[in-house]
Image (tube, rainbow, N blue to C red; front, side):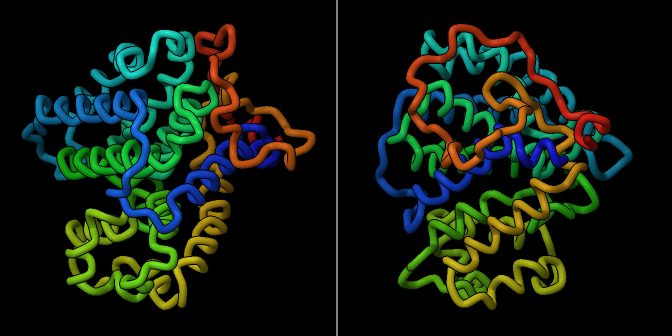
Length: 321
């Protein structure tokens, strides 16, 4: 874990979170922003995966949770990941696909346990980060990366969770604010900074949730929690309940970033599954201050070659050094 927290992958990933956090500050999901062909291609990819869910209905089984039809859906995604990304990206980026397709297939849950958590969310965000690093997404795509691509991903994984009754990864979502997600609360709170109507305490009000869920990611997360959980909000979502008492969205946003670093990025059960390769390498950065906010749009052409696939996971021995 000490190597991970000093690695190039760590600083690139965290810098990416911060860059997009700043990009969507004060912006709703419906904000007008440039939508490149790659942005549209990635949304189309996610739309196709949504159709595959419809084509793979849950099966009758004795256990209530973890419907085994998810394994069929997941197998189709894993086998089709290369073609899906080749269809979404211009040909000049296709040599990056053997590496980045692993982030795609790992971004929807575990097919053995039929669960989903912050590690899977991280994998998809790493895919987005890699799309910027190879230059297929550019500086002007930052807002759309959140409001179009990631929001579409969020809707898709919620459908997976409900359709296949997926378990929260870890111990009942211990490394998250709710059972499954974390980053939508970070970027979602940034969207609400200086909002004239929605104060932090407002997300506990049913009328606010109903009115603004389609426009703000944080509110849509609250709406989903209210949909899948019963009882008092203060009991089933105590951390979010406490957050509602914070006086400003700016403080909430800063606090959530600190919490994410401590409760997700610093937890071995999450990081042991992270994939590393030529784009997000597991090597120590000697001068981490030189890596800031990920090098968005710096690389307009992908590297000459990509290991196929050199991507590896951490192991207990490696991470413990």
